[in-house]
Length: 328
Image (cartoon, rainbow, N blue to C red; front, side, top):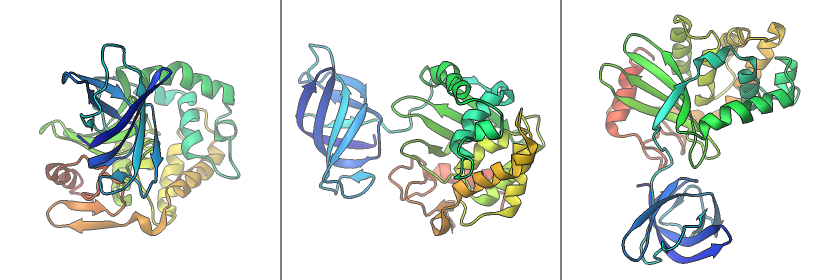
């Protein structure tokens, strides 16, 4: 449970129900699933469609703020009537997938990278990288997302891109749907069956999930496997950089050049744009903690044990430390 909210009032507005209240426990950091009850104690799970903040003080909203939250959910059918005396329970922003589909084959599709480029390869000089770098039209890129990717993200079979590290370790890039789209990165072990969430990109992000040295190590390991040559680019958004890194730009340029349909002469420009997106200066600090390993100081990172967004346990931190034991 991520939060409990004491209801001030409930109002039906057309096809939506508006719940106003204040947190009494936990933290609210964006759309997610919630549990509400009626006067008989029967519960209903609903998805937050949108939210408003009245008298906001900070983000995420915590129980010690005076902020009033306004949560919009789909209107429930009679006879279910929300009991204003029962707190709303948040069910967490990281809903686990029910099923998945391996979309590794799409890494050979230029339109896939056209969508990726609009997020991570744009710059003031290159505002349409899918056109300049891949020779694609905006209409084709948008249609590919709308007709192919979005239905999968919105279904129970979320897309994943599994990356093998060795006989035991793996990385899953997961494009999750639900209350809010999240591009997630998980690491795992086949032997121990332990998995840990490094972070996610979304409207309410939780990054960084990788230290620069960890990203470089993963890119090197993936290059030695049978994965698509450009697949390592999917991990770059998980890493914040204190400053531009020439060696990383060179590595990413080599990967960009392997994107199907790419104009190789622009690969270095695209790599430079990607790195510039990830530079956040002094906010990209990492600290070593003897009991749990490397921790981010960024307030929203999963790998910050003080972050109200983090779902990682002490055992998860230990697993992450073991996973990257070869990395300085």
